[in-house]
Length: 142
Image (cartoon, rainbow, N blue to C red; front, side, top):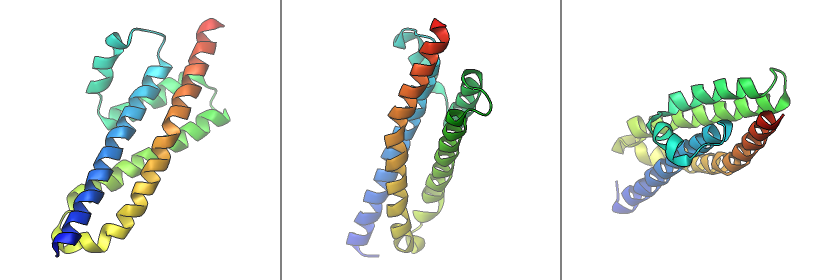
């Protein structure tokens, strides 16, 4: 493997890891949006200790209480969470398989397209957090 190929692998892996961190931060902001207004100082330590799996489980439970079962917003939100879960699984594949030198170059193209998907899902996160915050505000004021 050439130095140039190796450097390209580092760039791809670094970007995947940065986007993974952004996805987790997005989930934290969605959880915070579902909670009644509190000081960020109070909720931040709890949110930071949650792993990805727990974040997904908590969000599923929180949104169940905010929307009716057949509400299209709930259906779409759950689809988004499933996409994030699949992205996380593919990220784990990267860490465990693609970093092996023999396979890395063959997998780079696939990971570049994966990065594009990760960016798209990260871009949706603020919209979801705002929708959840709006819903939570309506529930607490009614």
